[in-house]
Structures are given as structure tokens and as C-alpha cells.
Length: 234
Image (cartoon, rainbow, N blue to C red; front, top):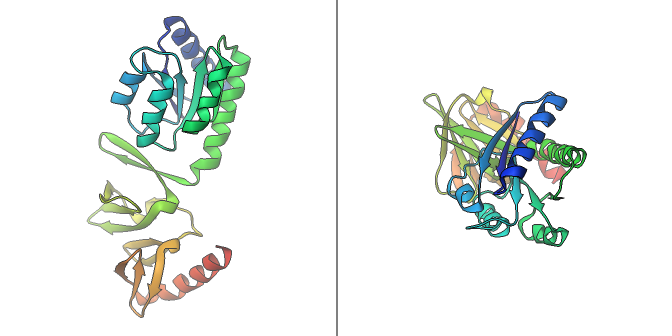
């Protein structure tokens, strides 16, 4: 499934893009879940980090696509962004907000198909580097490289993330999550650490980003092996 936000004020183009998305999903055999916004302001005010692709018109009332995208990047730096514009000259503005591509109206389905394929290929390449946290009423996308460590506590998983004061807490068990094996290592039954942030190792503890965590003796040998490999490749 791919989740798409369509931001378009023109009713005719709205219907065209919605039909294109439906056709694309049927042809590719995937579910396309689409949410529609009539202008940039309503999009920003109601934004949640659950989208894979944002199709953003540039010329809109209240808040144009360029300004909306600048605000978008303050709250979500990862979502795949494709501009929709009447004039190709506006496409250069996409570099400021890390847009993947742009569509110039009128848009044929053949071109739309190519751009969507490009976006899906981009998502497949970046998906392995992103971990999606599904919490009640909210979904967060975090870079795996930013996860300091994960601890298991009373049927919950607590994610400690670089640059974030708050913790992310979801129901689950360590064995049920999938993180990059070459980057993460168990240091006990309830602690999984990011090797990139290991600063010091003692007999029964190690320091991760300034925080001292307990190290179970039975896990030390495999930790040292994985650290040797990781540091050798870094």
C-alpha cells in the first residue's frame, strides 16, 4: 500500500489525479490510499506523518504550494514530494524543499505513471533506512540511524531517538521489530543498541550517547564481534 496526499485547488484536476491514482493502483496491483486537500493551508493544519507521497500543486489560494512545502519540511523532512505546476519555471523551487520531481499541467496518464514509478523506486530505496512507529492517533517515520537504543519494558517498546527529548512508546516485543542487523545489537534481553552511538564499554556496562546502560555478560562476545565489524566498515 502507498499513502498519497493530493493538494490541489482545481476541481477538474482533482478529479483527474484521483482517477489517475485509482488507475495506477489497479494496474500495479497495489492499494493506493488517497487523502485530498483543497489548499496548502488545510494540508499543513491537518498534516500527519503517515503519507508516502505528497502531490502538491504550486498555485493555490491561502497558502501556495511553495510556502506549504517549506512548512511541511519543518515537520516532515522525509516524505516524498512531487510538485504539480502550470509553468515549468516554478519547478526549480523544488530544490529548496528537496522535491523529488514535478508534473507540468496538463498531465498525461503516461507521464503520471512514470513519475509514480520513480517515487515508488525512491521509497523502496529509502524504506530500509526508515522505521515507522505506529502510535495511537499518530504515525512517525524515523531514520534508523537516529535511534540510540530501544528498551523493552512491561510489554512496551521504548525508542530513544537522537535529537528528541521525548521517548516513543509502542506496544510490542524486541523480537517483533526489524532494524538493520549490521547496525543494531542486543546487549541484554530487553536492550537493543545502535552501534554507531557506543562510546565506551566496561565489564558490565556500556555508554551510548552519554548514557550508561547495563551489559549482560552473555551478550558481550557477540557485541564485540559486531562492533569490530561495524567500526571496520564505518
